Structures are given as C-alpha cells and as structure tokens.
Image 1 (cartoon, rainbow, N blue to C red):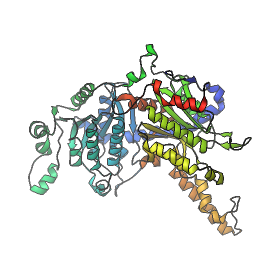
Image 2 (spheres, rainbow, N blue to C red):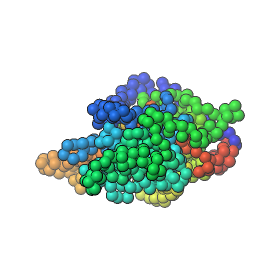
Image 3 (cartoon, helix red, strand yellow):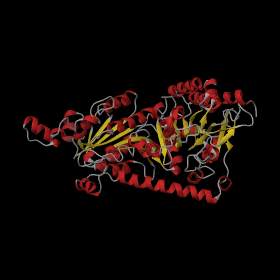
Image 4 (tube, one colour):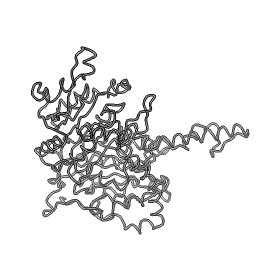
Length: 582
C-alpha cells in the first residue's frame, strides 16, 4: 500500500494527432498566443520608456527590475493579475493603469517560493487605482492560503485621487489591505517590506505590520506628504524631513534598517528569506534512493499541448493526453475508472510531488443508463458528480493538493436529470469543495459553462489560483444559445424564425446576431482577467510550469495542515472499495 500504483498514460503525438491536424491547431493557437505576448509586453512596459527613464534618473530601479533582482537567478516568475484593468481608461485624458499599477507574482527567493507585491513606480508613481486594492488583497490571500513569505516592494504615492471613490470605500477597498496584513501576521506568515520611495497615506500603512521594514535613503513613510502639510499647516518641509529613514529608523521605530539604495535593499531581503526555514518540498518528495522521486519531465512533452487541444471548443480531444503532458514521466493512477466515465480522477506527480487531478472527458461516451446509446462528455451526470465529490474528499483527507482542469459545458438537464437528483448530487459536491482545506488550483482549459464552472471549483469556490488559457470561455450559456432563448417566442421548435414579414424577420436576425456577438465578446478571457474573474491568462505550454510551482508551494510550509504519507491514504481504501483487487 505504500507504493502509489502509477501507470504510463498517453501515446506518442503521431498516434494522437496527425501532422496536418497538429500543425493546424498550433497555427490557430499561435495568433492567440502572440496576442498574449504582445499584451503582456504592453502591461510590463507600464507607462512606457519616458517614465522608466524618470525612475532611472532618480537612481532607482523599476518594479519589474526589482523583482528580477530579488528572485533566484534563472528561476521562473509566476505572475498573477497581469491583466487587471486591461484596456480600461480613466478620466478625460483616457489614462490607463497597466496591471492596476502593481505587480503581484510568485517568485522563488533563496529556494523558497514567496509572494511578491511591488508597486509599479512607472504608473502614476505607484499609486492605487480602482481594483489595485483588490489585486493586492487577492495576492495576500494566496500567500495566506499557502503560508508563503510575503514581500512588499513599496513605492506608492497613495490613492490615485481622481478615482478615489472607486478604491477607497467598500468591503475590499484600500483599507482591507491592512486587515490582510494583520491576518498574515496572526497566522505567522513572514512579511518583509522594502520601502524604496514614496510611501504616502495607505501606502505608508502597508509595510508597517511587516516583520522587517527596510528603507533606502530616498524612501519616506508619511500619513500625509509635504504638499498636504504645507496646505494644512503652512509648514515648508520635505517629505524626507517628515518621514524619511532618519526619522523612522532612528526615532519612531517604524522601520528597522536603513540602506543606501535599491540594490542593497534587495540583497537584504534575500538575506532575510535565507534565514527562514527551508522548503519542505524535498522532504515530501523523499530520497530518490529510498523510493522517493525527483522532478522529472513528462515522457510526452508539454509543448505538444499546443497541437493536441483543439482551439474550437466544439471539437473533442483525449483528456488522458493532456494529463500525459503534465504528469512527471507521464505516469498516473486513475481511480474509479469504470464509473462516471465523463470524469477522470487520479493522482500523478508534478515536480516530484503528488497532486490529485480532476479533468472532464470530451467526445461521445457510452451511456450507462441506456446501453447502446451515447451521450456527450464535458457534461456532469450523476455518476461523475458522485465520483469527483468522493475523490475530492479523499484528497482533502490525505492532504493532497487538487488540480481541477475544466473543459465543461455544464450539468445534464431535462426530466431524467431531475429524476436522478442531480441537484442533490451537485449540492454534495458544492459542500465538499466549499469545506476542503487542501490547496486547490483551477485551470479553465476551454469551456467553463453554467453551474459546471462552479462545481469544478471555479473562482467562487475559492481555489487558491484560477488560471485561464487563451482558449478559455466563461459563460452561463453560449452566445447562439442565449440568442435563441432571448427570441424564443419568435422561433419554431426547430429554432427557425416564424414570421413572414421581411422587416420583422430582418430585425429578429439582426437582434439575434447582436446578442450572440455580445455574449461571445464577454467570454473573451481578457474580459474575465480585466475584472478579476480569473487570476491569470497563460499559454498552454506554460501550464506545467505554473502547476509545478503551485504544487511545490502546497508542500513548502510545515505544520499548518495535515499531509499524510501514502501508506495511510484513504485513496487506497476508496480504490479497494470501488474497484477491488486488480
């Protein structure tokens, strides 16, 4: 029982997809991924070269340069929230806030995964725009759920005042950042702050609860800056005089250490992280000489995902082939394989560490309720719902992080579905996912439709992170379906327009086309990312990199959640009870 029965999964690419189809899929996806790269570059540029030069002329680094120097050389930056506020314009000048003026990213520092939150000092001096507080709070919540050290690179001139009404009040307004600071501290999560420049009002409060606060000679922390003091009290004094390092390191005690510049401060933060306990990931991997497993790439390369997942959401593919390109060595243990065939549940290693996978099968499948008939995959039926609910509970009991890979059209509907009690089965799954304590991560591969999106641990059910691909589509129903529902009284049973009046027919056709087009536009993943309905958009060949990072983060800290060794997994009991000896 101590050995997890991992078996080879997947086939060589030519056996999965012929060269012509593979190349067609890759070419179709290429345009989307070029758009992704172009838009990322646009966000990463902030307000552009002019403002980057202003930062450099002050002898400072930009936010992204600071992140680059902070992280371990050659390691990945797993950014989240890149496209918050993307394309939104503010005020009569049409100002934009790329990335909501803040960089939030998982970074490896001295071998430990950390959450880094860095004000983009090329965007209105790092000020907080609408949704900046929510983005920071979302990053803090991710760090809290995973108990990751949190590093604030502060260079913030406070709220962007022309839009203050949209970022100051409310339950998740700017002040909620400080509550998150407090919760991280209450749970013993290390917080470090480097103050590099402006740190005004709310920006001044953000670093204070951190365990260590470093300040450069150009940095200051103030409740109100010099301009406000001059207006309120007629005092001519600089912000450095009011709250610079001389004041806060040597007099107030609000900061701990004074350093000359950005580069030294970043090295000090690395040294602080180095003094923390190291990652527990290697412990949970185990010694390879004694049955443990080092991280190993899949036997079938992850880059092949770009050519085996059809860009058209109506086309099917083999879900097993996706798993084969994500799991170490393409080895996988499928549980309950003979029930709820529309779902695949099982365990694989990612980066040498165990994770539970739940993914929707696609295409036509045998219908167990009606032998000889087929029914579509990508839909939740009674058996599949019960299966993933039991598997989710077992993973939670065993302390195994869960990776949800969504490509779902929703729940089965109709009289038979109601008679089978899908509402009740769905409620059981909702309860399970709502009360799980293990880290769960959700990927929207393509379709994320209706209540199926919720059931597969969509963002409303608090996965630590939800990723979208460039193919993702979030909606209650597709555009054409909604257009039919909207104009239902004008259509016959075959969905044909019933009127014989040419003008009325034209109006209905145009109305249906506009409705469908609007819904299709709303399903764009950049719309979801802009309004924080998903955490990040990634390319398919980046998926394993992100999942490897997430799984390792899940095992990094010790003592805050139960992680069983495989000898006592309840998954073994579940397999025995449902499958028997094999």
